[in-house]
Length: 114
Length: 115
Image (cartoon, rainbow over all chains, first blue to last red; front, top):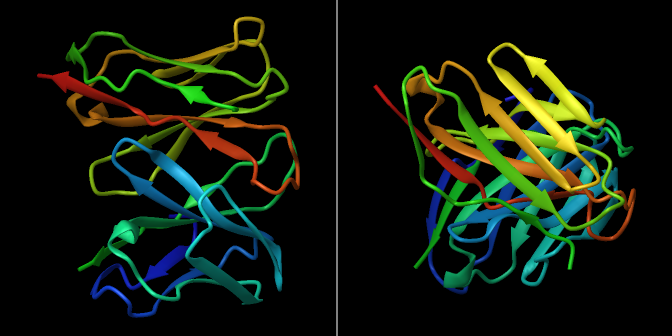
């Protein structure tokens, strides 16, 4: 998994509770991404980061926030989890943003919101 | 709406046959194309990238790109049961640094290789 870890790997939580997912990389790549994957929708970008403290919204950012205080860590926070946020969350990294950007994925976090 | 389209499958082929996976995309400015393999319950794994028209071969895998037809395909020769997975096509939208990120993924084609 290209030096990428995600924690926790599985989580069950209740509606309305805050949840933070962590992505940690050892590759020193500049760009980091959070995706969610749902049946019938494929991979959808939530937020991404192009450097420490530099983040931007993706396609499905509502209800999510992110932070990146160090190159190696990218946190995804669900401020108040809803059942619609039950999903598999993948972190990805890349080392360039040009035409040949290649993204590598972490192992994923399965989140169930009851 | 920039889109990447794939047949969802399942595509079933016998062991030893050639599996052909197809992908079309809508954005003509796209420059880079990727195939990821995803086993059930696992994360996507990059298997091929292609940037120029024509064929690119890597072992049993061949990626084919036709930018005029906005079409990219993946051929798997001598298919094995271990190739059974979902194959995701991803396209670089060419909007470097834009607000929506760079890669658009298709929903994937599920391949089943029967012994």
